[in-house]
Length: 479
Image (cartoon, rainbow, N blue to C red; front, side):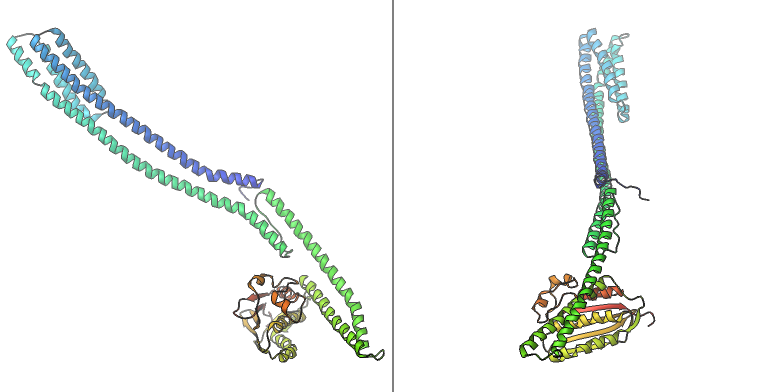
């Protein structure tokens, strides 16, 4: 059972377009998603880096302001400056907490900085005891700002390093996503190509079947059924072509019957005319003068020519009908070829043509008269087109279960553009029209039909000089 059978050729085209486009759309959607993720990660990294940079700078600025207020408090002793120092500590805790949020690499340095700054502020807030001792403690505490600034610098460098590490990680992610995107896109494009090939086959197969069916009809093959598989509208068209084939076969049979009947009916009055001409020629009905004898000779000659033409038409119709007697006889093909060659001995000697016949004993099953007609046509054509003092070669040998016979002349040969038409009924090539002896153009067509009816083949082979015909027939089963 077929998994998919579209109702129309248009539906098949539309389905093919969808299937070919779907992987490409998926590849595009996947690439856009990857780019969106990269853009979001890049924006997040930039945002975090800017925040860390600002927070690390704020830490340094807060420490500078706190140191300035602490020095003012030491010198002036006003409580407002101490309040500013305490406010700065609160701000520092807030900024450091924000800076270290999710950043484990900065926690240790940030906590150390906060602890030292909190200890420093506690010393400044301690106002009980010996004034000199308090002053020394405050001077020692203020000296810690140098260490706090160094820790702030370390915190800023670590923040910068985190930014550099994030940039490198982002670069690696971009490279990884680029590789993933390339492989994924290549795979999806491969699926598109595969779908394209499949649907090209599905689209062109029924078209090709229709085309071959029409070609067979044009070649006169009305026996081979026309089958079209594919969309239902094309299958319907195939069924109509098959109906046309059957109708043409029926008309062809009627034509063959009609031509055979007309030809047979013509033979009877023609035989009477020829018989009457023979009586006049033999002067059985009275003497004739020389002019009358010439007229009777012309009449008798044209009667014979018309008789041959009618016989050719009958043979061609019989060949087209593939009529071979049911009781096939065993035919010695080598003897038959020699017999046909002997029949042409007079024509060959008159023109000093060398007829070289070399045959191997071979037996075939078939109709002797039809096979004799085939080889008579081939050899008579060779004699017709071979110039005086030329050579005609007839070679026959067995090849496995077949017998192959080649007839080659030394004439002008067949032109390249006429080779495909040489077996067509009534076709006469350029050289045939120049010949002294005119033919009907049915000899090779009859030969082809007879040979194919004997399950054999006849072909025009390529040759450097003249025309070379090859006849292949199956050997007799009894032989």
